[in-house]
Figure: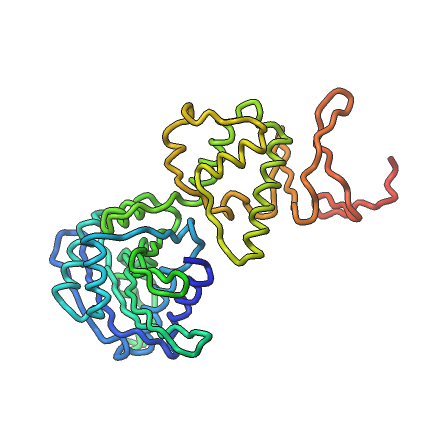
Length: 359
C-alpha cells in the first residue's frame, strides 16, 4: 500500500460519517485468568467511547512504509480465517473467538493486553461515479497498564483525595489491516502490519499469527545495503564511488517520484547500482548469506532524503544536496580536506560571518 492509500483508509477513523459496523474485544489478563470478550455495534457507542476507540485504530495506521507499516502475503488457512472474519462482519461468535484464541496464544508476553477487532465497509469513490465497497477488518493488540494513584478532587466529599487505580488501555503495540488496499482495491492476498519502533517481538507476533514473512524494516534495509557496498566493493568504495552511488539513487528516485510511484528494487538491481558506482563486479558468492535475505529494497529508504552527513575526526557536516552538491576532497599542505563551497551567507553557531572579514 502506498502512503496515499494508507492515508485514505486512515481518514475513515473519524467520528463524523464513519461506516464502521462492529467492534469486538478480548481482554487477556496476565495472571492466567479467564479471558473477557465483548461484541458491540459500533454505532451504538457513546461519542466519547467511539472517539477513544477510533484514536487507537487511527494510531494503528500511522507511520511510514517499511518503518511502522509493512505489507505481507497471506495464503492458505490463514487467508481463509481472515476472509471468514471479514465476510461475517465480526458477527459470527465462533469465528471471532477462534481468532481471539489464536491471537492470545501468539502474543505470549506475560502482560495483560486487549485484543481489538473492528469491521468497516468503505464505499470507495471512483472517478466514474460508481462506488466500490471495500470491506476490511483491523486488529490491534493494546497493552493494559495500571494507573498510578494521584491526588484528585472528589465531588461527593467536596475535597481532595487519592484517586482509585484503573486499568488503562495504552497505544497499540502491534496490529494489522486485512485485506490490503492496493491500487485502491481489495487485495485479499496481502495484509498491512503495524509495528511501531520496528520491534522484533511485534514482527514475531505477526509472522506467527498470520504465517507471513514481512519485509526488512527501513533501518535493516539501509544497513544491508551499506554492508553490501562495503563488503562487495572493499577498497573500491572510495569517496567518489559513494558520490556516484548517491547520484544514481537520487536520479532513480526523482524519476519515480515524477511518475507518482514508490519503486522497490531487487537485490540484483541493488548489486548492479553498486557495481556501476564502484566500477567493480561484485563476487556474489563470497557475500554473507544474511545480506541475500534482503530480497528487495524500497528506493526511498536507500536514497535517504536530500541531507547527507559526513563525519570525520569529531566533525559532523550536514549537506543539503537539493541546494549544494556533495563537497570535493582536496589536498592542502599535503593533508586531505573536505572542501565545502561558501554561499552568500555563512553562520557559525548562529553568528553571521561578515563578508568583509580579513583573510
